[in-house]
Image 1: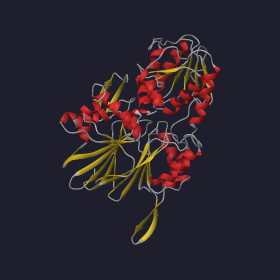
Image 2: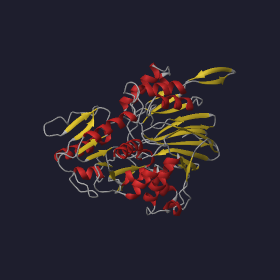
Image 3: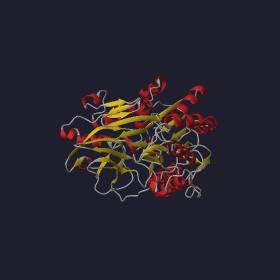
Image 4: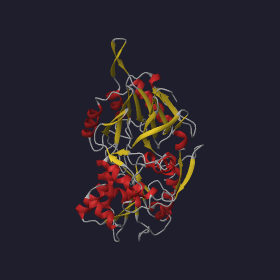
Amino acid sequence: MSKKGVDLVVFSGLGKIGSGSFILIYHRKSHQAIIIDCGIDVSYLIQDLETVKDPADGCWIHVFDWIKITEERDGPIEILGIFITHIHLDHIGGIPFLLKEICYDRGRPPIPIFCSAFSRRFLISYLSDKLGDGTEGAERSLDIKIEAIEGHLRLDPFQIIPFPAPHSTPGNLAYGVVVANQRFFFSSDFKLRLNGDADRIAYLKSISSFKPDFLVLDGTGALRPGYTGLESDVEASLNEIIINYAGLLYFTFFSTNLWRLLGIHRFCKEHGIPWTFLGASVKSILLASGDPELVTIALTGTVPGAKVVVAAGCLGNPGSAAERLSRGETVNGYRIEPNDKVVGSTSQIPNCRRQQLNMIRDFSALRAPVFLDSTYPDDLFLRPGYWTDYKKNLHVSGHGGQSDLRDTIDTLKSRRVKYHRQWQWRSPQILAYHADPVSMAALKALAVNDCGIPSENVHCPVPADGEIVTFSF
C-alpha cells in the first residue's frame, strides 16, 4: 500500500461471479477508510481465510481476516463507515464477522453502516439474528448503527454520493466517492431496464454528471447481447403458469427478488388464489418490503391449503426449504406429491451448479415436473427419466447485458481536466468485477472497441484464491 494518497483494495469479486468487497483508504498522518460492500464467497475454499460453518445458511462460508487487513505498519486504519449497495449475501454476508472481529471482540463501538431504507430494514433483522439472539430490539442491545443514506454524505475526507440503481432486489445503490481529488464510481450489480426503457433513461440521467477517474463495473452479463430482459415479462410468464395449471405449484427464485413476490401476490389476490411461503429468507424480505399486506403475510407465517407456495433455496442450498422439499421432506405442512409442479425462476449459477442439478434431479425423482427458463442449459435434463420442461421468460438476470454496459460506460467515460494549463478529455480506468475471466475479457473488448477506452485503462485481474489486489493513486 502507498504511504500517501489513496489505495483501493479489492478483497473479492475478481475472476468469478459473486462476492464483492472493497476498502478505499486515504493515507495522511493517519489512515481513514470506508468499505464498499462486505460480502462472503460461499463456493470456494480461499487460502489464509477463516472458514466458518453457518448452520442457518447450511453452507461453508469463507471470511477474510479483518484484523490483519485493518492494520498498517505505521498505525491502524480507522474505518469510518460500511456502505452497502444491496442485500445479496455476496455483498453483506461478511458484516457480522467484520463487526465481531474488529469491534465487539476488541470492545470497540460498531462501525456505522450506510445503505438504502429497504436495505436498512433487512439488515436490522439480519444482523440481529447473526450477532444477537434474533429477538426484537437485539440490534439496540448490540448498538448496531445502520443509517439510510438519501443524499450526499461527508465523512471527512470522503464525499459519498448514492445513486439508486435498477437491480433484481429493491434498494440497490451505486456509489460515487470523491477523496483527495480522485473520483471513484462503484456500479454495484445492476441492469438499466427493470420494467422498461424509462428506468434506463432515468438512471443514466442521474449518473451523467459524475465523471469518475476509476470505474468499478459489474461485468456479469458482458457476454449477453443487447439489454437484459424485463421483470414484467417474467411476471406475465409466472402468472400464465398459475392460471393454466391445476394442482399445487411451488415457485423458487432468489428470495431477495421482491418484484417477483409482489407480482405473485398481486395476481393471486386479483384471482382469489391462496398463496403462502416457506423459508426464513422469504419472510425477511416480506417484512423488509414495508408493504402492509406483505408484512401481514410474513407475520401470519405459512398457512395451509395454498395453491401457490414460494419456497426459499433456488440454488439448492442444503437445508433450505426447496432443497428439503426435493428430498421428500415435509416442510411446515407441505410435501411434494406426484404431479405437483415446481417452477425454477432462476438461472444456473456456475459456482452452485452441482447443488442446483442435484435438487432438480431429486424433484424429478418425486415425479414432480420442473419448469425452467428456456435459456437454462439442457445438457443434463433432457435424458429419459427427468421430468423437465422449458418455458420462455421464467427468469431474467439482474445484471446488465452488452447494451447496458455500453450505455453506462458512454455516460461516465469522459471527464474534462486541466493539465499543464490546458483542458483535456480523460478516459477513466475501468475495473471489471463480479465476472468470470471470459466475461471480464468480453467487457474489456466492449469498452475498448465500442466505447473508445484505451486498452491499458481496462483492468481484468484474476488473482489467486485469497490474494488481495490493490490500486494506488
